[in-house]
Length: 295
Image (tube, rainbow, N blue to C red; front, side, top):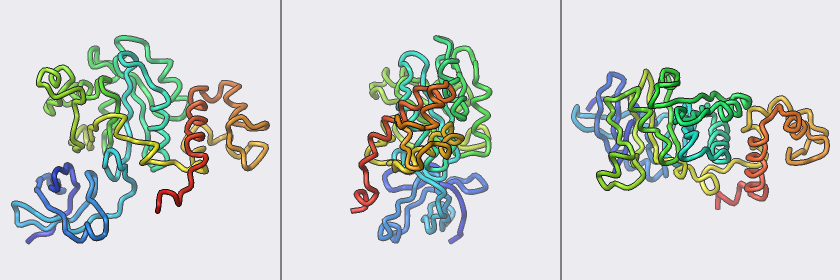
C-alpha cells in the first residue's frame, strides 16, 4: 500500500474521490475511526490516503482552517455570492447574511451581479464596494465581467452560491465550457426539476478549485451557521473604522445615542441596506446563548 496526499474533490454515498498532488483521482472509503471521532470527511479536506493504486482509504484529515455545514465544504478561501440584477431581483438581506457568515469564518466574500445585460447593476455593486467587499457585474450573454470573474479562482478554493435562476451554471460555462454544467433550460427539458446543481463537487478551474452548490437555501443561517451577537459587528467590514468610537463600549449599533456606526449610516458612509441587514441579524441572535447549541 502507498501513502498519498491529496484533496477530496467529491463525496457521495460514503465514497470520497481524492485528487493527488500529481492529479490522479482515487475512489476511497474512510477509516471507521472517523465515525467514532464524529468526524466526517468533507469536500475540500486535505487528506492522506493509503492506496493499492486502484482504490484507497482516507487515513488522515489535516486540520481545517474553516468549513461550512451547508454546503459541506472545508478549507475555503473565497465565498462567491451570485445574484442576478433582474429575474430574480437581488435579495440584499440574504446576500448580507452570506457575506457575514464568510467573514466570521475567515473566508473572503465576493459578490457578483449577473444578467448585467438586462439592467445596470452599478447601484448594487457600489453597496458592496463601499463595504470593502469585492463586487462587480457579469453577463453570460455579452461577456461583460467574465474575464474578471475567471481571475478570482486562481490559487483559491472557492464556493459558489446563488438562488435558483441567477445563472451560476451559465456563467461557469462561459469560462469553462468543458465542464458542461447543466443549465435550467436543459434541466427542465430532462424533467430534473428547478435546482440544476445537486451535488457539491470541486472542479479545477482557472488555476484553482470551485464548488458549485444548490443555492442560498443550502446555508441555513438560523439553524446552522450562527454568528454570536458579540461577533456580528466584526462581520461587516465597513463597521471597522467606527466600532471603537461609539460613546458607550456596550453599544449594539442599532439606534443608540452616540453610536458612530449609526451616524456613519446617516452621513451616507455606510449603506442603509447593510445596516438594516445588520439590525435584522442582530435581532435574530440577540437572545441566543452559545451553550444552547451544545446540549
